[in-house]
Amino acid sequence: MSTSPMREIGEVDEIPRFRLNDETSIPAIGLGCWMGFPHGPGESTQVTEMVERALKVGYRHLDTASNYGNERSVGLAIKGSGVPREEIYVTTKLSGEDHGHVAQALDRSLEKLQMDYVDMYLMHWPQALDDNGNALQPEESPTILDTWRQMEEMVHSGKTKSIGVSNFSVKTLQVLLGESEGGDGVNRQIRIIPALNQIECHPCLPQHSLLAFCKEKGIHVTAYSPLGKNTFSEDEDVVRVVSAINSRCGSEASATQVLLSWAVQRGTSVIPKSVGEERLRENLRLIQLDEDSMTVLDNLHQKEGMHRSVCGFHSTDSGGSCFGWTYEQLGWGMTVGGVVLTR
Image 1 (cartoon, rainbow, N blue to C red):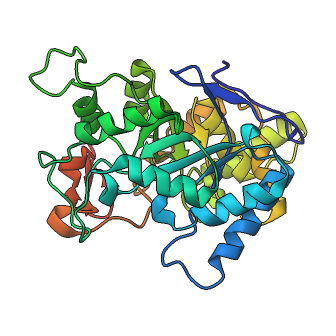
Image 2 (cartoon, rainbow, N blue to C red):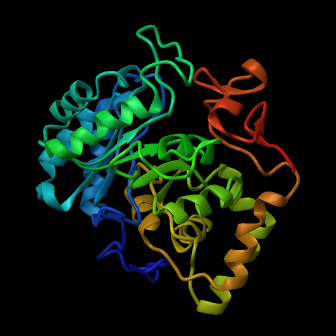
């Protein structure tokens, strides 16, 4: 596997892949199928049409989740696409309410997707939720470990090829891997190391330390929201990088292509969301960035006010939290609003 599987602009015939620790592989670029809450009128049709378009132009990784409420729409699009199931990499995710009954949750997802297996099944968040949607505390059952052991059984059942996590920090990964404070660093708790950690990752939130930790443990990282804010394309440093690349290569790269190329070149797969066919095609066309361009984008977060999450799931409760866990419990070094604490 190349750590920078780049394609020149215009080549969309074959999407490069990353090899995972279980000897499977994942496409470097996929389609994020999250359309936002609430699930409004016509959304199911919009999702189906988006996925159909994506498969038509060459996408082979589709990322959905039980919580997205659109697994059925994704499954319908796959069924009607004419693309063989084995050519499509499908990721879905376990919701917090289902941490205590993983097998039943995956069966429901498979029924909606109209398939016998998924390629990747992720624990969507580390925290379990009760039937009323309230977060259980980290020590309450089902714990991260309780849930993971159930997920391991899903691999043995053949209902998923790989398992992984999402929104995990170094802290929560250490809990899962048996490396929390006071431990001896020897993993006696789990049989399967997560193949993947899907996290928010973009130039505003490059997650350098978390990426390094995952690499050390052999855990691949998929970046969601890889384009960050819409205003990224107007940032003076991004504009400068794009201009320099186009001048040097005689190309017409867009800011979107540069940002996705940066993400893939640093070793992360990406799942941007796009509805229109032209943008879907654009997102598949990666370019090779030089070292200077990579350095500029690696350090973009150091500009004043830039180092932060851009997602809308943050709460002001307890000095900052997400879905019932504080930033401290999540292992996120942030303050209210998802702003990264300076050290």
